[in-house]
Structures are given as structure tokens and as C-alpha cells.
Length: 298
Image 1 (cartoon, helix red, strand yellow):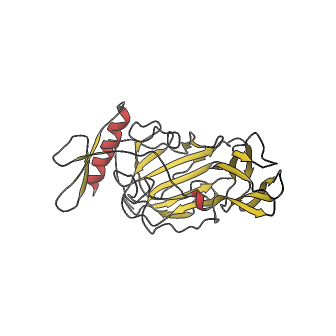
Image 2 (cartoon, helix red, strand yellow):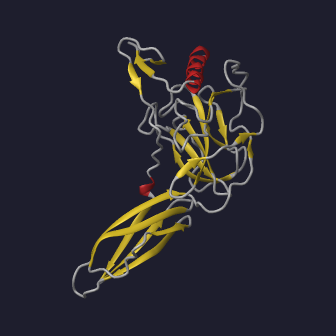
Image 3 (cartoon, helix red, strand yellow):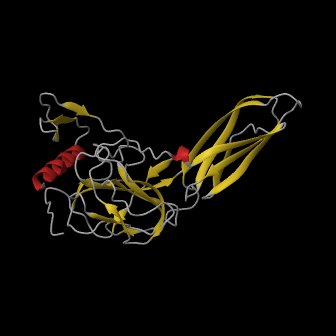
């Protein structure tokens, strides 16, 4: 286990020092998956996908209530967090009340608000329009408060395998300032900052369908969000809407999603205007980097 973990860690660190790196994935006769920076027979190029699909469309959506000669357009936000929305209309025919400029506003958590009332300009004839709806988790107003994060795990010491601007996978807007910490699967993951649990994923086994694997997203009081990714299947023990404090148990570390080895991917994000981006943060104490890796006692 230690040898395999060290191999993955070395692979991550090498990728952060290069402009780009090609990783090859191979599976042996026993089904054991291996990764290397050198191609081998039957190996395939491993492509990192920088996305995190949280399926918010299930909890943020338009609710158009049709009445005689009028459509009331509501936006429903079932999340335990505010959501910024933008709504516009095209192909407008026989419609009064459709604004020329997009409607842009922030909906509070757990709300259902009417944002437009469309009426027929000619009574008795149908309304025709196409809504265009965009949204992003979080409120872009306000400023992030200064905060130094305690380690979001128990045990160790563990080591940093990929830091900010890592060329292997920390190059996209949502993960630019993330940190990857190598640790054995099953390491307790705890809240590094208090807040409300907004989203969780707990059912992915191995690669799963989402590159993030199993995760917990916590909304902090200043509008930032801490996200804990690649968690062990079935280990998430908090629910959406639950308030957690610093040190509260969240889950166990794992190796799910688009992960090339057991580790915790921890990132802090905020909405900066219809889009989540990662923001810089610091731990309260230094985290060593490879090759001085030590598992320590659990």
C-alpha cells in the first residue's frame, strides 16, 4: 500500500513541475489499474476532465404557471444556499412583460420566487417565447473573510502531492488553487471551517460517473464554500442542510472519481458572477511536499 501510494505521489509531483504531462493507464490480468508517465503495451492515455457535475438542475429550475392569458415565471431554489440566476427571453411573440435585458438576481436558499409576469398583448391568442436560464451556486456579493484553515483530516502527517496551479489537474477555474493531500483510504475527513452542508455525493464506487467522485460541499458564513472530494463510497455521514462546526466528521478519504491515487482534494470556491472559481487559501500550519513522505501512525 505504501509503495503504491508513494508512486502516485511522485507522479503527481512530477506533473506539477512540467508544462504538461501525459499519463498512461493500464490494467493487468488481475484487474489492477496502474498509472505511469511511460507508455506500455495496451496502455491508454488518461485524460483528466476538469469539471464537477453536481446536477443542480434537479434543485434549481424554472416553474412556469400558466393561467388564462398570462404566464407567471417562477424560479425555484431547493438548495440550502443562495443561487444567482439570469433569465432572458427570445422568440417573443404576442407577449407583454418580457424584459429586453436579462433578469439577473440572487435567490435565497430554499425559495420559490416569481421573476416575471408575461401577458398576452392580443387576448385569445397564445403566448410564444423561449426562456434562456442560467444559474450559479452562491451569492457573488460581499467579500471573503481572512481565514487560515486547520487541516481537514485526522492522522498523518501527510504530504502535498499537487498544489495551486498544478499542471496535472489544477489548471481550471474551479480547481486552480486546490490542494491534493496523499493519504490512505479511510482517513477521517473533518470540516476545516464551519457552515452549512449544501451538496453531497456518496454512492460512487471507483471511477463512477463524476470526476469529483464522492464529495461534501460546505457553505461558509462569508459566502465561500469548502469542497472535499474523492471520498470513500458510503462514508459521507452528513446531510444537506446540516450545520457543521470546525472538526465535525464529514466522511472518510477515498479514491473515487477522476483520481489517480488515494488522496483528498480540498478546494475553496466562491461565485464571482454566474460562475464558481477557486480562491487562494492557506492552512494554519505548513504541509510538507514529497519526497519527505511519511504515513505516521493512525
